[in-house]
Structures are given as structure tokens and as C-alpha cells.
Amino acid sequence: MTRPMKAAVRERYGPPDVVRVTDVRKPLAGDGELLVKVHATTVNRTDCALRAAKPFFWRLSTGLRRPRTAVIGSEFAGEVEAVGAGVTAFRPGDRVFGYDDAGWGAHAEYLTISQHGTLAAIPERLSYEQAAPGLEGSHYALTIIEGAGVRSGHDVLVNGATGAIGSAAVQLLAHRGARVTAVCETAHADLVRGLGADRVIDHTTEDFTAHGGHYDAVIDAVGKSTYARCRRLLKSRGCYIASDLGPLWQNPFLALAGPLLGGRRVKFPLPRNDAATARHFAELMASGAFLPVIDRRYPLDDIVEAYRYVETGRKIGNVVITVTP
Image 1 (spheres, helix red, strand yellow):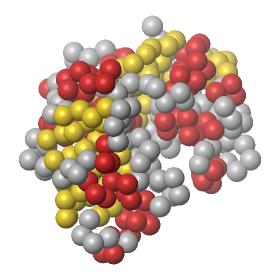
Image 2: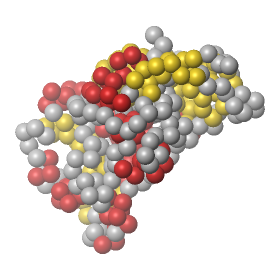
Image 3: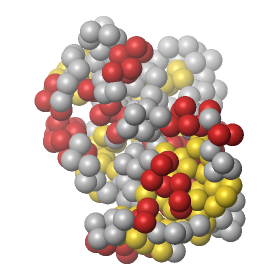
């Protein structure tokens, strides 16, 4: 019998208080899998949605009445402790970071993941805590940017430029040579300029949709606007793209109705999770072109407080959970 490990567990859907830290059975690496000793993880929007099963459609894949997966958590950074039969990509002692929104399990001292999963080696100069938030928000941001077809010289507006997705998008857009207008609070203007924004609009004092701007793409990284409000900001062939379904779940349907929108388009691309994506971000982090923004750090024992903070909607970048100090 394997020894127990500490994990954040939830056995029903609900608010942060359904989560408790307790001992559970330590997993074993199966064929083609790695056993990773988790040093750091995150609490992000994906984790919050799964924990609460909001929107309701989460239950179609995770259990209608009760969750089938007790230990959630999608992002992690840690050390490979053991490998299963047939593993050739990694070996014990390797430092790795990854993302898994199918198997989950990152809110624990150990997890298992396929050697072919969304997984890569941590760049040498980065700590576990710096690498742990390297994929969740950023891979959504990359999906949005590629879906919008952003190229060097394009003008792009990012609404919600300080969240995990938005702060990654600003950096990735700047790296591509786009001209970036960031929407956030004035208090965070210096931060987003440091990430690569050319212009900052304070959403607390002015309505960014009232500007007669001309953008090749408008990215709503927080899902708090709509195509109808942002249409006037787009060039004749401009693209609106959001990080969620929209308040009425309209974005996928608007994407399908592209030819009816008069040249301007809505895109709703699906994210790609694979090893190549993880290696891409490892290279960007190694070069300094992208570094995850970290707001707060909590120990695993205080993960409920981390959930509460994330759900205030006030976090800047990412919230990191230290599992193994």
C-alpha cells in the first residue's frame, strides 16, 4: 500500500468552503506516466469553474450530482519522482511544469501525468513557483491571439489586461510586434506598460467602447463585454474574440454567423493542449519574452483563502500555491 499524501479535496460542488486539506492515497505512475512531486500549483478561473460546476455544463464531464474527481488543480511545477514503463521523454530528478484539465490532481503533493501530456522541462533560471503559472492563462491567450490571426503591426485592444489571460496576452502580443492598447485600472498602468502595452485606458474613469478606435482585434480577456459593444472599435475586417462563452453563451454562435456580421468577425477557437504548447512557453520563459505575473502566494493549507481571493475578481495575474516549501 502506498503512503498517504496531503491534498486539497472537494467531494461536492459549491463555494470555496467545500474544499478541505486532508490525507489521501498517493498515486502510482502507470505505463507511460510520470509521478511528479508537486512543489507549486495555482488556483485559477478553470479550477474555480470546476469546483463550483459553473456553468452547469461542467457536470456533463465531471459528474451530474457529485464530482467524480476529488482532487482538482490544473497547473503545476515539480520534480519527477518516478516513471512508469515505456517512459523515455523524462527521468527521475527532472524539473517539469505542466497543465492538465482532464486528469486534474495538481492540488496535492503528488500527481501522475502522461509523458506526452502538456508538459515540459522548467527553464534553468526559473523557480517552481515562477514556472507553475506558466500555462493556464497563457495557453488561452495564445489560442485567442492565433485565432484572431494577429501579426506584427496589428493594432489590438486587450480588455482585462491584468488577469492571468490578459497579462499573458499583452506580453505575447508585444513579442509578435503588435501595438497593444490595454484596458485596466490606472493603479496597474505601469505594470501593463512594463509587459509591453503601448497605451492604457482606465476602465474606472472611461468607457473603452466609446472610443472610435480602429483595431484589427479586440480581445476580451475577462468576459465582461460583448461583440455588440465592441463592434465599433473594429476595422472593417477586424476580429472580436473573448475568453468565455459570453453572458448569453452567444460567442460560439456569433462565430458561426461570421458572414452575416458585415466583414467584422467573432472568433471562438478551442485551446490546444499538448507537449508542443508547453515547450513553446518554456522557450518564451527562458528567453524572457514571457513571464507569468504573480499576485499572491499561499501555502496549500490556506488554499480555501486562495479560492476566496481569486473569486473576488481582483487578482493581478496569477495566484500560486506552495505545496512543497
